[in-house]
Length: 292
Length: 237
Image (tube, rainbow over all chains, first blue to last red):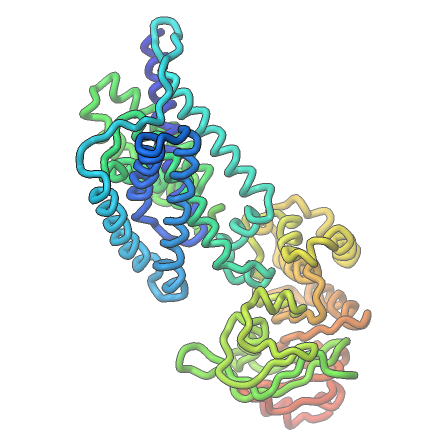
């Protein structure tokens, strides 16, 4: 019984963390057909900004988190203005922006490395204490991550379904030209999507580093997993990505317990291969490329 | 009647290719103006140039006294030109109601959306029953109605319809044109692109014939139908 509680608790935490880092990626791909390869670097940037605000400036944790969101939001906006907008109408936009954001990611990562050094640094944004279920200790930090993930997903769903901006994002994703004919200023919508995904990346970076530690290249592994989750769910499908993230987190926790930690990533990849053989367009994807 | 939209020698095209050459045309402030001509001769390009989806290579577009050439599509919508594109271009994953409300996206239209929605439902009653349905599951005729209804939701002063009959069964075409005709007769300015001249000849106050990107003839519909040599040369009728 305790084992099951333990697996569910750590699986849900992992799934929630994956979900937070994935939704930003899925939102951007769903809206612009843009795989943002700098997303991982934004995770690291967000983690370090929060660390800097708390450890060096002595600010309140929430201000640290908020500051990280603002900095990463601005970074996301800058990626749109500098890289995405100039090539939006170009042929092969998807390939070009993919390559461009790899470069931007490397720049951000190296700036972080230069400023903070290569040594692992603990993330001060961390709740202490734990609650005990049976024999199992569930750290409060894990509960915070889970709660935050649920809050963010609900917030994003509300934004997409209920607000004017959300309707514009969905309409633009489904037919850019038609959205323009409705009076939507498409570049404004895209700019807001990139800023939003930057803010989400910051939260994700702070949460991930709170469970392990800060490293300039800490974004690489979560971004790889986020990509895998996006592909499994169907690229650009935000709600599918959330579901896939939670399921994969639980499966990973189970694989770790049954087979050992070293196999969990291999199992994850095996699952992806199986899913893609069965449904090449992803679990929730459609043949027709329509998403939000 | 004074001109609502004045095209002054406009040229447009894709890349190096010029599709539309020095077209000049005045669209009246009320009633139907029809652009006819064979497929692939610049009719759609003309509408796309007016709505700002395609940049002008030359010429001026004056709408309601303002030069709107070179403005962004969203600015042109805000100025009052509504473009219902060819093949509807609905938002496939949104419901009929969400599609219609996207038509009233701009603030000035959003403020009127409740009243306009009732008008659209009165004109196209089928949409009221279908409002919760996802757009991609509609029939071709219903999609066309959503496309037109979405355009009407924006308000605007000029409604541009790109081939409202395209791909529909004859009986559905009649229904759609009944609606278009009703709009034109109520005094709304409607600019229609149509391949079949006979379908609009008795309704349009002005018909303009585009051939190979040039305006080759314009005049009243009855006049065109009395000129078999033009019909034979350009429209193969």
